[in-house]
Image (cartoon, rainbow, N blue to C red):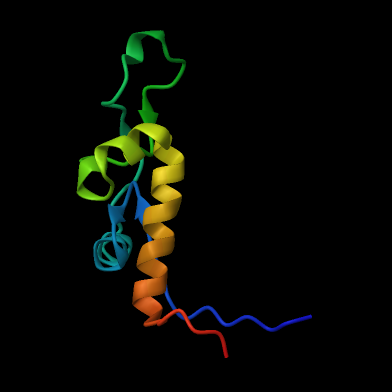
Length: 94
């Protein structure tokens, strides 16, 4: 079994996108659960949710790639990219 060290963090969540925004919101006790804005709430059982707000896939992906990936896959790729950058990993395995 190989040991793994977590050395970087990448976040895109209802509390914020990116490490700094996320930690600041968390430390200030900001709520991530708020009234849902992205969908018509009249047909939903719940009116509140943990939405990622202000997200524009074009800031992170080429248009054709964004069309191929669903929103959650986009979030995973963005967070993974940020974690690698945060860790300062150059792509070489030791």
